[in-house]
Image (cartoon, rainbow, N blue to C red; front, side, top):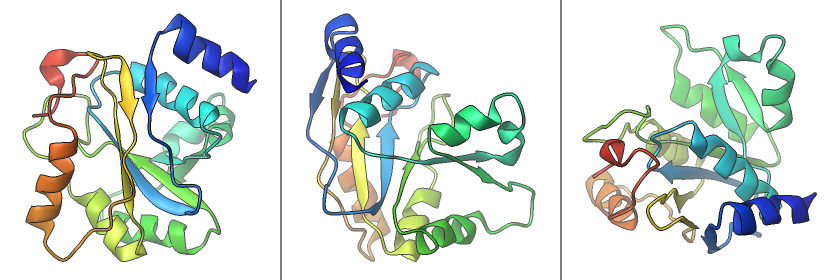
Amino acid sequence: MKSLYEFIYFKVLKWKLIGDFPRDLKKYIVIAVPHTSWHDFYIGILIRKIKDTPINFVAKKELFKWPMGWYFRKVGGVALDRTSGQNKVQAIAELFKNREEFRLNIAPEGTREKVEAWKTGFYYIAKEANVPIVMITFDFGKKQNVISKPFYPTDDMEADFKFMEAFFKGVVGKVPEKSFG
C-alpha cells in the first residue's frame, strides 16, 4: 500500500516531502500550517502513510458516530468531549500520559479561515504533557511539505511563537488568501 500512497503523492499530485518525523520519539505534537482547506486532510493521510508514522487527531465526539466514526478511528481519530466547562488542554495532555505512543496533529489556526494569531492550546498541551512540537508546512504554492526537527517549548512563549511562525513564513495554503501570515 505504501507504494500506492507514494505514487499518488509524488507522481499524480507531484508533491515533494522534505524532512522526516523523529523515529526516536513516540510522543509529540505536530502542527500543520496553513490549514485553509479540506484538502489538507488527505495530504496529511498520504504523508503519514509514506512516512509510516501513526499520527492522531482529536475531534468532537459527535463525529465518531455511525457511519463515519469507524473511519475516523481507523485513521487515528480520538473523540473529545467539547462541551463547555471541560479543561481541554488537561484532557488532551492526559491522552499523552495514558498512551505509550501518541502523536497529535493540530492546526494552530483553529479554523480554515484567515487568522491573524494562532490559538495557544497546542502550546499549553505540549508544555503540560512535556512533549516537543514538530512543524510541517502545507505549501500548495510550492507543492511541498517540510517537516521540522522537534522543538521543545521554553518558558518564553512569545519567543517560541516567533520561532515557530518563522518556520512557516511564505508558505501558501490551498486557499492562498486564507494562509497564515
